[in-house]
Image (cartoon, rainbow, N blue to C red; front, side, top):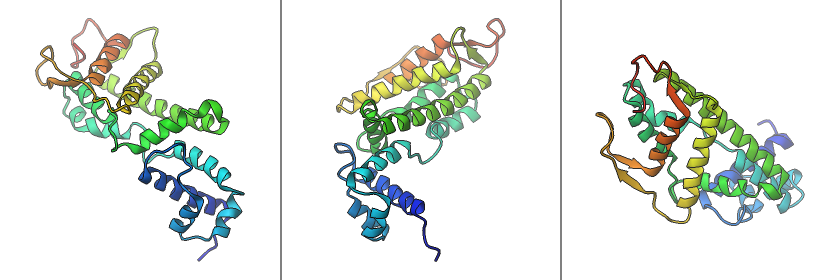
Length: 235
């Protein structure tokens, strides 16, 4: 078996450390994930670990950055997968918006990865490396969601209303989603409402997030050809 390089060993230990961090849940920072435990889990020796880092503090610094950057797929992948069947069947846009909001509702303890990431990102103002990682992760997410929203807008015959851009739509929706997530971290259940003002083919049970998403879509976008009937849009 080929011997690992120093960088390969370091990456292996960071991958194991991130997995253990998410398995154990959130604590104050990442210091509850000990390098010795990560080494044992990875099946390596202590010597291998200390060729990568001089001490626990250096390991924890890199672990925090790795945790912020870690993803198990495209940022918009879960949302896109959740609405794929509806979009393929050309469901009314309000129904797509209602369904798209669901995977973005934060739940504890089911979404420890998100909770860990947002907690570490909050430390950015006091740590330059974390701030840089947080910016990179956020920019990737906004780019991914902008691409998804542009595809949906084209499919449903809508365009961004001047002077806005689709990137700004993605920024507004991201702030909305993360704001509700912060509320959920306090243990507050997310509100739902029964709506009687929705068209046929659209469910009546709406999360407050979905209602707010619809409001943003109504304000930031418009029919691509306002005077010409086309695909079903937001009423």
